[in-house]
Image (cartoon, rainbow, N blue to C red; front, side):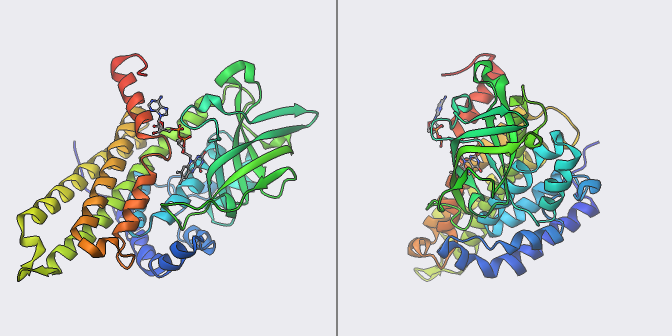
Length: 384
Ligand SMILES: Cc1cc2nc3c(=O)[nH]c(=O)nc-3n(C[C@H](O)[C@H](O)[C@H](O)COP(=O)(O)OP(=O)(O)OC[C@H]3O[C@@H](n4cnc5c(N)ncnc54)[C@H](O)[C@@H]3O)c2cc1C
């Protein structure tokens, strides 16, 4: 039986997220974006409200809710401030899900629990200067020497790196084994041999901090390995794939925020003696925006629903991330246009929504990579 109603629990967590966005996030946005500095204490506040561990079981410090709830929270937060949503995407999915899924009990106690409580901040480091979309081209290695692993290499564009307490690093333990020789490691921020660069200056999500990492004979105990030494690449892919549903919910929130700002402006702004929304040229844009958002909402929540039932949804996650990220860009661009000159002024958020939306056509797998994955699933061969 089809039922599109939200449960009581889902409505409750959605309202918590909405209140958090309005009361806690909103007053901090301007300064954080202008200074490109993330208000670190927000992790603790969000952790206390249960917003960091929505889908994780209660016994590891999560809320034991479903992925639909997670998407509801992301939509509300992203509608207000994408820099925060992006930082918690990096933290409470990419930097926690591998520990939850493949980590030891000790790793769960020392990293997962504090991360879900907002007491420790995590990063996930896969991308490298030579290995972006082509993940196989990463060069970072982890060599077993006695009871330790020694890491060498570098990573770029790593969300939360300037403020993180630990980082999950993807590295080759055996380059000759190809993807099968890739593993995941937990590295503490203060480990000798790990150097974190200054913050990278970004166009979008300026309030979320990003940096490069350098590993120079960075020695970690063997207990830092997450899961088995070989064959962890499918785990990396699975981490990214499930993450795409949440990223799509972030994009839905951006699109909604841009649309709501444009809608209100179109009702208020008078030209030629009438609201600009009464001109068909503007009214049709508003109609297209709200229709696109409705479509995106169906895709996000249906894909989350599939994931909640343990059904295969990697392709659906790619489709949803692809369409929602491109929709967020086009809606934010229309919103800038509808606001006329004010669309270019920072006192309105639409320019920020546009810059932030552009991040998601690249981050967590570019649009071209999503199209390649989708095409391969229907055609049966790789496109190039
Ligand atoms: C703000 C931000 C935060 C990020 N945070 C993180 C993070 O926390 N951790 C992390 O590991 N990474 C992170 N990334 C990195 C992100 O995942 C990569 O930027 C992304 O995977 C693309 O890699 P690339 O930048 O090297 O681009 P490239 O792979 O060099 O791609 C350049 C262009 O070529 C296209 N292209 C590449 N290959 C193909 C192909 N086969 N077919 C068609 N077109 C192709 C791409 O689609 C793109 O348009 C972040 C990026 C940004 C912008």
